[in-house]
Length: 391
Image (cartoon, rainbow, N blue to C red; front, top):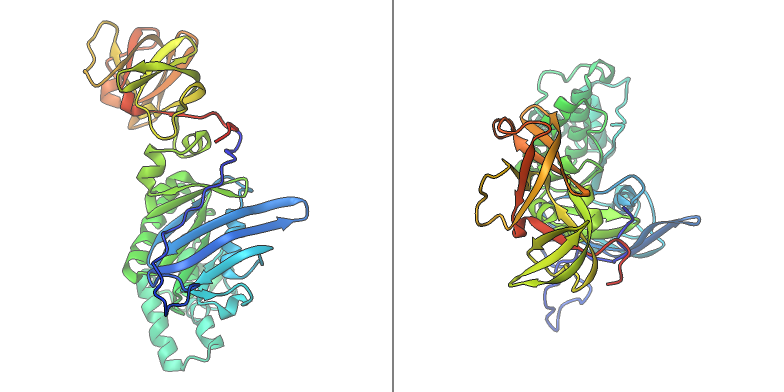
């Protein structure tokens, strides 16, 4: 799918300024304020007018495909890149001209960048040595950091003796030992295996909640963003296309790109027709669907219907569906794919092929090659303008 070309600013409403207030001051609850940031690398536009406000103590994920601009935006916040235009403020202070070491921000990179010849203790203590923190205080703060990341007892190991998960924790402890107000994380779990990555997602969230530090986390993994974030900011083509809680982004996608990138969706090309009471009728490949309109629903003309696979219920042909299931489509179950706790079913309905995901026990009632009834409610759909449609 092509990128939706709408420009969306994910911005908190600024507090009303009193006559004596500095009009450029940010609200006290705001950790980061980015306004209309643009960045080009030669002929390539990495960021195209991005605005983003992050509250203090918030865990926010910058999510999107490779090349969408999320890492560039993170590096601009950290001072590792300089924007061509726009402003960056951290806790109300404009930091556009400040180098990374002058910003109260730390960064955890995907590579971890540990010193191989140093011990775990020495790696974690390094920022405090540079800051000339007294030795006794250094020792106490390193021990606190090790306790936080649950690595007590490995202080004297060399970095080369650590597992991937331990290395990630040491890098995190080193970033936190200086007590930054903002922590930037650039895909820090990407090198870990799946089971360890899922465990560390929960650990990172626990640490963030314990400290109350503002986390800005870059990832291309939508499950990772859904698992950890207070808020997801979805990027594509150098622009912010939607921001909201994980539930809002998943259940209320602003456009086709968001619906397709976050989770899985049946995306059906169709044409908006008339109304059926409070519902809208859409012709999708010769199949009439009843959908509940939203602000994103086009008044008429081409549209894309989005239906999450878990919203589709399958019944044997002839069985009744509940009143809330306004859409009841006769089809044939072409294929069943076993996924462990779930079963994915591919159902042909005329020219359409719908994907449904069912718990194993519910899928046992149907079999490949059998006629089935695919049921879903009007409220389980989203009707979106096609990519590239004018707004």
